[in-house]
Amino acid sequence: MGRRSERLSRPRMLSGDAAGEGDVIQVVSRAFDVLRCFEGHEARLGNLEISNRCGLPRSTVSRLTHTLTRMGQLVYLPRDQKYRIGPSAVAMSTAMMKGAQLRNLIRQRLQDVADQLPGTVGFVIPDRLHLVYLEYGRSANALGLHEVTGSRISMASTAAGHAYTAALEPDVGDALLAEMEREAPESAKVLKPRIENNRRLLKERGYVVACGLWSPHINGVAVPLWSPQYQTFVVVTIGLLAAMYDEARLHKEVAPHMIALAAAVGNLLETAEGDLLPSSVHRKPLPVQAYNNDKVIKSEEVNELEARTRRAGSARGLRARDGRRREGQATA
Image (cartoon, rainbow, N blue to C red; front, side, top):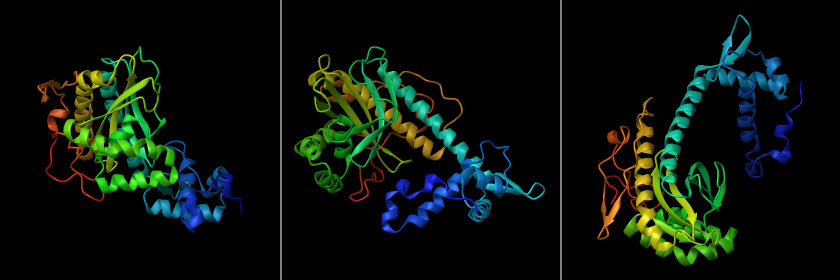
């Protein structure tokens, strides 16, 4: 009866349509269009109202609401002959809110470091040849680097990208580099000559530094860690003014803070995989690792959440193909 929503018209279809997957993608997209019609848990809508709201034919809406009801995403109310949000959708939204709680805890940890160092501290995840900021903390007097949540940064020209690629098994990292050479050859020219040194530094010290790559005025330190939630490496990173922090100072003063931050965030991620965060976690200062004759001295101070978790796994403990950590390996 009604016309398809313009949101589903050809110019906005995903790239999978070109591979003959358009019908599958449209079904998923339309199902989410239906769920978006319910603006609150108390909303009650019939097929005609849903059809009018999302611009889909009533027959299509009828099939979708039937399927979503069987999945528990919607509940049918016989007396009203309408639908409302179902238990599965509520459970999903609750899980997402708990995920937000985890990110809030991570943000607090990033800010703890930013309060001690005049830079921008980030928690980033890979997105093909880039990384995306999930959370960040920033010093009040940070200059020259103002990334925010959702910002995309280059994998080839940032400390975070160099740390991520160094954490991958060599064959996985080389395959990524080969893809970069095909799609972004100029970026590959930056990363390729540095990747072996990055791997060595990560193996020996647990972090990677990058000076003047993204900008001649910015130097950075980054530490990769395994995320059970995303089944990939994520990275904690910091950018500082090169005029204030040269490479020697990065190693001596900044790297210990970032290693401690990575351990704290890693503990949060591992805890969230099993027991999705207690409702009350008290913040305490981060344990700062110091170096004595090139040996790491670990502070005993941990917060209540971290005390119940094991140490984050080593960035070098990976399975050869899928990039996951080998069982039983602990942080060096």
